[in-house]
Image (cartoon, rainbow, N blue to C red):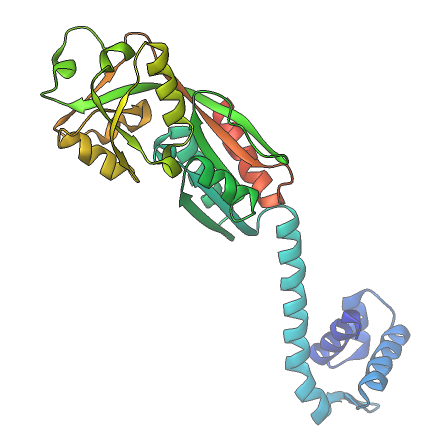
Length: 297
């Protein structure tokens, strides 16, 4: 059934006059009458009664009118949704990040602006790190993600990344710890013999290995006493005096009263990388553009 036939039918039903309906539609009356007849023939029913004085709906026409109106409205909604999806303004976006991700102002601002600009997009946010996040994106369960690491992450074929920003890493330790009270900022070498608290393999892959490599470059093998699956546990272990850890500067605002955050005398910097599959949906591309725009701002 041609949607144009439905529009013509509804216009005549509203005007109850073929001449006025034709004027509204911007056509002449004979073609309009032909289109209505074609619709009636297709349906096998008579929709209008026509006399020399008036036009009125038959019982079949009365029953057909609300359904025709709903059909046109649904068709309009379908076309609008298709256009929005093509522009990336409708659909689904899956975004993964490490614990520090939402505390990076530019990332938080991009999420805020994207949510405000495209409220129709279904947004899935998941905290994940390292190899777990890479696999979630590679398999299509998430569209984009953030990975923190000292160096560019090694990614499977079909994935790519961009460096969003560089950030200082801080040593986190209990306030009573000697390194917290020392006048001089610590060096990596000062951690020799210190119990360390790191993220577990799934959460801290990348940062853990590279930090351990820094320790080895400083001449010692670090003692990893505990591993944590989340930020709260990590900070809780350090607050309990079970060891020290490293965190990005963006997380310093979460400082519990019992903890001290100190910069290293020789700066230790990590990078935040935006990773994704090469082929992005229009919605994911729009979010990528928003994040990169925030970074360049």
